Image (cartoon, rainbow, N blue to C red; front, side, top):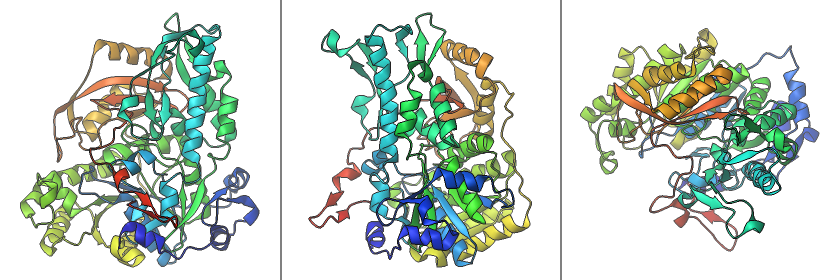
Length: 560
């Protein structure tokens, strides 16, 4: 059965009843979106946060090796592990990001797990869900409209139209919108200037929503957004100067509330927020994670793409901002993906190839080192099992992990659900229940911005040198004076440790070129773009959208 067929045959329970039954949350605190989706009130979340006698649960981070076309299954593993922990009578909540429509209709397809480790209703989660992304895009574009409106009506703030940094957004891969010109058609249509679109998941509003702790914090962060500069070229213009933050926060009044859904095995998952990890910070909302930690004894969450991106930002941005400390890390890999890093083409990955496995293992090894040595965390490797994996390949991977002193577990949650992940769950429990969490940031707040960039590039990516032109260096020097204490958010291809997506394995001594840098003042970090990284993807030659359909009965097909 396909993923969507499995999801459509799920025996779901009414979400309001399920949440009340499992976590004793009063029905009045839940706002249903149909029968199987619900939002939790911020008032109840605030009450939870002040329960000092309730110890927080233990946080487990799921991350992965560098992504490949072969697939790794990070979300699937997160769901499978959460279900397995619940099957062992461990009170567990899963925390995930919301899928973006861009990749759903593009190359990746959906993002609700797979096989028998999914969150449901799968079609709803992948298509519109509770409208959070729509609200984020409207709030973002309201600010865009207010900028052009202000310039059109006299520009009393003296905004330099050539230095407006705030683009527009849409939740779709659309390369034609990367660079546009607005205001054409005469003076009644406003002031002509260059503009462009980013995808919603790259919006600073998305980052703000995922880091905000309450409505007041949300509104204050929105007001801090720097939209551009005045004609003196140095004075920033804030969203608060345009009096936009109140209306933007009003549009996000429901989007800030976390969403409750369930797994195929009727366990609770909170799916909320969705910044990409290659161009943003790649984690679900702080509100969702901290709420789950108050409700459950164990919380399993994921960070986007490979550990060089998602896990790095989870630790250095999200954990720093929200004072979170994960108890363990699960590093997901597949035999197929490791062979791909060993130089084997996608069409030949189902054939046994121990030499390619040995060569590609360096990618997993680098990620293991980063997690255990650079961050000091307890970790376990999960081999997400595929049908074509051979005993010899599995044996080789276990042997190589053993040499590194790290446990390696084969998990069959895709095919068997919680039953297939119970060994993984037991090994994770052995770590989080018996070993003291060891955790450290990669860099200190006081480290200069350029040195933070070098630390990430050299320690995590294996780079030999970081370079930037004079213009970028000058911009960093300007930011250093007032914003040097902020963490950095590296925007880089997810396909490689380097900035070249074609370089597989674990390249060393490569050069990382910084092509742009921008302050996201409301989110509270500095985005550093490395290499040729775009914030508006394009659709592939054959997009997934060509396969998605709906019949006369309303049944959706083609999602995966």
